[in-house]
Amino acid sequence: MQRELSEFIVRLAIGWLSLCLAGGTPVFAGGPDAFVEEIAGGTYVHFGEVSVTTRENMGDIANLGIVVGKDAAAVIDTGGSAVTGAALLAALRRVTDKPLRYVINTHEHPDHIFGNAALEAPRVVFVGHHNLPDSIRAHGPFYLHAFRDVLGADAMDAVRLVMPGLLVNATTELDLGDRKLLLTAWPPPAHSDCDLTVLDEQTGILFAGDLVFLDHVPVVDGGVKGWLAILDGLSGLPATVVVPGHGRRVAPWPEGVADTRRYLLTIQRDARHAIAAGVPLARAVETIGMTEQDRWRVFDDYNRRNATAVFSELEWE
Image 1 (cartoon, one colour):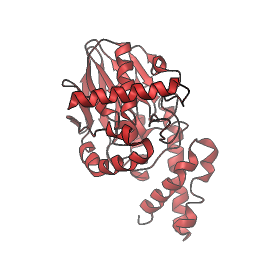
Image 2 (cartoon, rainbow, N blue to C red):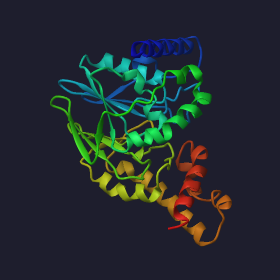
Image 3 (cartoon, one colour):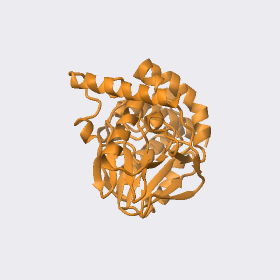
Image 4 (cartoon, rainbow, N blue to C red):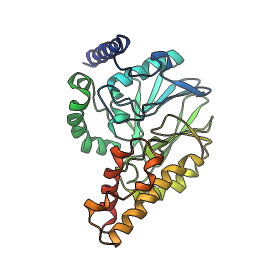
């Protein structure tokens, strides 16, 4: 069954890339050889589109990572479809002949885990926050159903929800051979209820998952108070550069968290003001966070949703 699934994923990826070469919308800007960029020795990043998931981009909207050690490699998140996962695996094979040992999921959202099935293999260990299995069980069936209309039946047939075999309760260190990754499980709720970060200790590069956004407006799916509460601890990690979960660039650390912090503080303040003034939710969502509109992309796709979530969270504090 696993071999049949892998072959199906490969056929799907080839078919989609062939469509692109024939003049369709390109899934991966720059072609397959440009799928990842080396941002430090042995550390690679794929920058997803700053967009919502569509059939044209096949869910390729999150930033993904590869870290290569002396003995093995690790992948950080796998993208929003099996096609993206297959492209990431192909990129890994191009940059190293070291075996893939770990696939690390920073949280349970589809744009970060739908590519998992493409990287499954007998000796590959999937790693996540200790809450990740419960979160996948709670939300996964809905994601599988909802995204069939977005990505199409063929693409979704290749998606499988993969449970982690190694869970992180506080911090865990993974050794790739003279290369250690520090994994930190953050207390929920923040961006989600299972946020995990990965620090490449050799280079000081922090893969922050969706605890940090650049250019792409942050998305509140957990809790704004909890997210803000962990930012001081997050900022204290001994990193020099951050790779955000979304946004096609890296930033110096801890300066790179400033935009996310400002946006979260703004929508929290605006929601509290609206609640104190007795403004109903239907009117409040039209004003919460609007001073941030010109600072972010895909703002109109997410800000009202964020405003609703934050208003609802703070209404009874």
